[in-house]
Image (cartoon, rainbow, N blue to C red; front, side, top):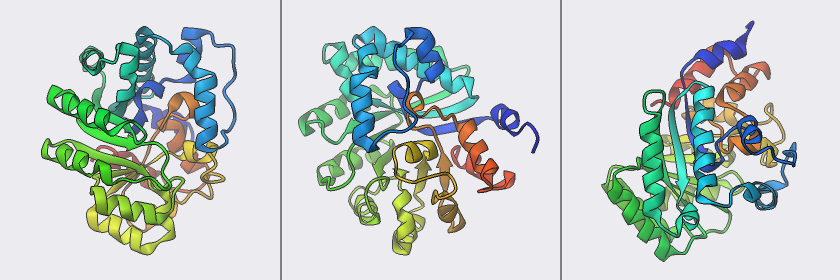
Length: 301
């Protein structure tokens, strides 16, 4: 199709797997901060990505004003790509920039949400790194849920060998309060970790989940629970979870009936908008335009 990128850009899109303070485009970041480093073409796994963030990006995010700038860049970058519906996790650890006040973080999220409500349906999620002390997890969760500002929760961090049992009550509490529940699993961990996460946490959606392709029983469990996989293709490639678009398991999962979406993950790191991701799926002869539109619409459901 001629001018496919332009066609896809004009369509309303949703991004449902995004880390809010890392969701700004490289272009907006460089214009704002005139950074003196270059973004790498790939990262050496999760550890390599974390190293890059600490060595480079964190030098430009040292105050609460910077955090607000990064979040504002994120919402603006979504609007740039005609994202009309955004589910993005707000890492509760950002409270450290606000004198350890999670209430101050909530206040800023509420302001951003109100400021841009005419252009984008922003539905923030409470984001937890699994390595955060549990006492802080549950304390922050209670305040965030009571605020009424958030629409979901998301836990992330290292996947393999992580004990998810301590988060079981958190997920139950979230569901009681009608919050959508998500867990990062199955990008760098095997299908057994996906099974465990589903049975322990009963999540509504899984962030990544691509290793499910290695087990029909895991796929059956996902289908049985009607769990959506929110996939980030360029992230998977640049982090080394898969080699290329053509070898990515999204097509197999889609053909087996799994509801999949395509998302940015961390736009500032991977430089792949939803439009670019959808376009790449067509250009690499992975999906037809009809299938791409199904995937695009999945993110709204």
